[in-house]
Image (cartoon, rainbow, N blue to C red; front, side, top):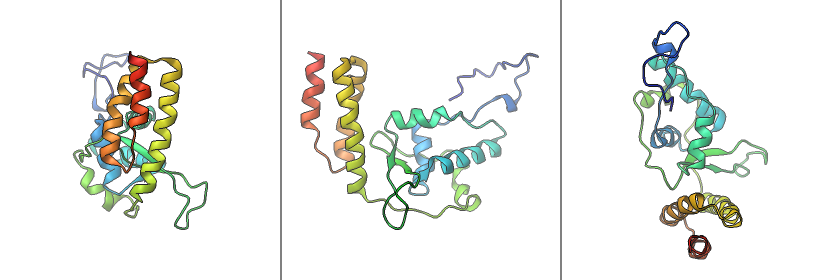
Length: 179
């Protein structure tokens, strides 16, 4: 996640551990959220800060969470039921392109953080992700963005096996852009 080569980039040329960032793959970020059943963005940030502290490195930048969400490795689960308020921060849960993997030291997080394990309604989650996906397809088709179209085609197959959705009509729209 840092893009550092370990050479150090400080003005004095030092490359000590404090200059390094926690480097997690998309699947490892999803694994941290999966450990709890889902985490809010605030809780995931706290968990990543804890992992970074334990490793003696800096936490990843906030943008890393956005990258993981854009890649469909984490997806938002709206929390406006089961006693939550309608404006409750959504949970980030492993998405269709993730193969959740626990990074080193993550197994201790439930003992360190005061966060209860959560369950999500898979059908409701599938509908929320399908809605997001439909919006991204509409933008990709309107912009004729072939790179995004290709990425969304790949995600569409993952999404159908992951959630209770049918995306054949959207794949046809995406394929039409590629022709």
